[in-house]
Image (cartoon, rainbow, N blue to C red; front, side, top):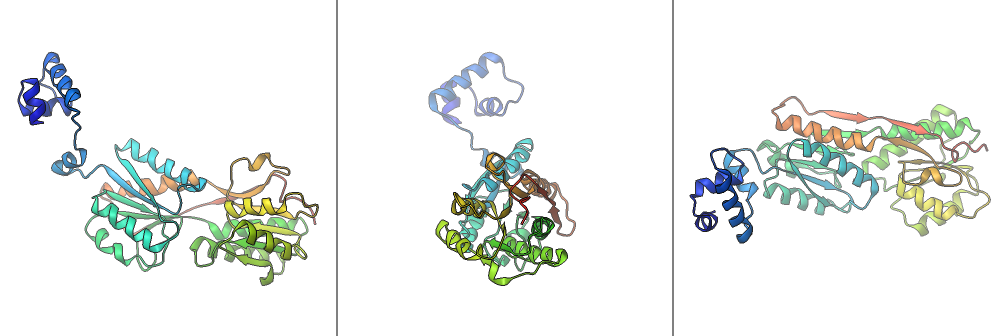
Length: 324
């Protein structure tokens, strides 16, 4: 600012008024200051300004599993839209389902003095962040709850969704239903398996453990799993959109395709033949709810930690309505 003031022939206070859009500066003087700023490539240090004013850094941290996954892309966009209305910028990082990477990102964002954090947890131990919460940094967990920590969480009704899927297939006459899920140590995968088991019980369909295959999955492992399970199963529930796509690749060209219900919608699912029946939810609502809960904490809400559950619904398109 001293360099800008010297070049423009004004005081540092005048430069400050111009860059902060304050009154008391004539248009001609403001133009001279702006011209000097352009010549020198001056950029405001917003973090320093906000810290000086006691208003934080103007940033939020968002830790995801994998930003390349369309589910998390939609979630990120929803968080950004809420943050934008509050004048905040969102910093993101992918944990790649690695608890050590998750912790590294969280602590890095805290070191950068973000005003708050939204975290999709990869691990089951989150005591490491308790100090930051106690020091005043609000944290909201999304999609999965934290481990060994009482904190805000916004979740999907995972078990309710797969229960709907199992019951829906049973209503179309299927008695042998296979389930392909993600790694069972992941909260969402375990909840979806639990819901599938409960849905089978409610529909009077036997739950057969040898028709259940939990991940992580590759195209090859899914193809191998289906070649075995589909000797008996006439229907299939897939535990997330990536597994659904892997299953569709493995089923391409087969005449004995099973009835299929996938958890999570995905792009072009309605254009396939047959269109894919899915258990869907408002991913945008998940991200928006997490961001709004975070801002309520930033605004001074000190009530007990909250748990918000976003409902699921079954969207029938054709693949899940194939009779046995």
